[in-house]
Length: 373
Image 1 (cartoon, rainbow, N blue to C red):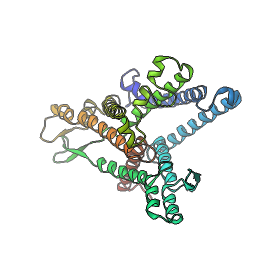
Image 2 (cartoon, one colour; image 1 turned 45 degrees about the vertical axis):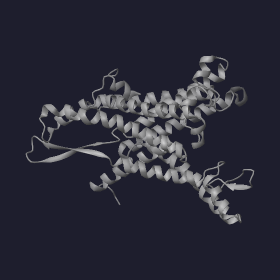
Image 3 (cartoon, rainbow, N blue to C red; image 1 turned 60 degrees about the horizontal axis):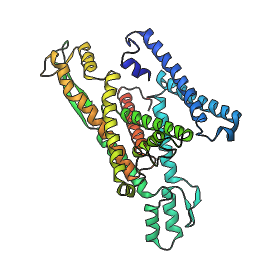
């Protein structure tokens, strides 16, 4: 939020001044604490953890403080990483760890459950070995292992792995623009513009938008069930209203049963990701105008072009990469949801892009000789 306010010039921040940077970072932390407390109070008051009458005032206050304390821990760990005691962002690491933990648990979980057909293991791989060992009809056992609906199955697991490799493949797509240094004659280099120019930011912003829409639709539906406008927005569980149509279909069969839902969902994700991506380059300092200024400050220009044409060349690539890359991110999320990847399409995409960023950081540190191993 603070970066957004700075990007649209509501807050005037000069990043070249040490005092401005320190003040901006302090304001970010304070705003983060305020948002954490506000979200904690809103979730408890809205009944997300049960009715206030059922849980009582004492338990409600304890839950609020627990959520607030958890937010402080995340902020402190993120600060620890940014101070040089680790690599990358602590929040990104939390997101990736949580999603990877969910995938590993649903693949190897040893917990059992009764589904009406007997006792089954929750983990897809553990359940497969259990089916093959305990049933005489091996073909039916394999069919249940691949297609059971009551718990994660092998199809979900293979879909997750497939999406993982597809995202890594797309991460390598980029255009290298040759640059030359004006002050050092003969020295040349390249300026890479990746297909995922804004990384996973579009899907993070789109997920935040949808999550808040779900939250407010549930909150309003609990209070005003009979209101027509509230029902148009959505219900406590997305089974109707706008919140339903922007939620992913639960299975491939649901696409055939309600094609309008699938069409609206696909259109919403693609358009919102493209718009968020283009919006982000304007507020984050990575627009063609900002990049051209950075290159001029470093006395760099594109090979075969005059210095005055820096902005024109960047205008040909960056907005296209941002919009098309955002749509590709959205399409991969949709594909993961339709294939039934473990977790969600958004979660898989966030985890893969974060892990890939850490791999790039690790490789860069190793190249510079800063790694101990």
